[in-house]
Image (cartoon, one colour):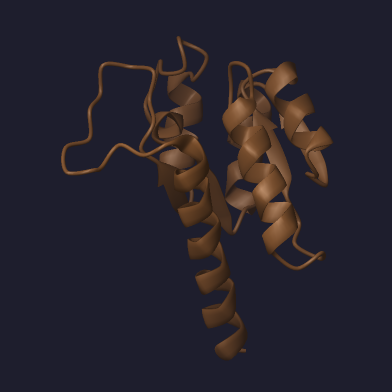
Length: 137
């Protein structure tokens, strides 16, 4: 999930596509068509844009990844609507969020790291979750 320019979502999608099995389904949900398009070009299987697309699809996901701002209404310079943030936060999907916002929210106790390092940690966590799931099958 990403918005604005889609750079974070693009990087996350590229790294997930490289690191996880090829049958991993990635659905790109963007607050706008530009963000969704970049995630599709980076390897997402499907994509959809806008408030209704986000609200309708987040309950069909096992894991939602993106910047912390995706659960904050009016973040991403206003692109993230209250309906979107409520749907994402309320989804039963596991959420792995990067400590990045474009709002007046600061997460105390989190070390600032470059985006590529944060995405590396996100992908590592996804791999761990996938391994646990395989062990429990």
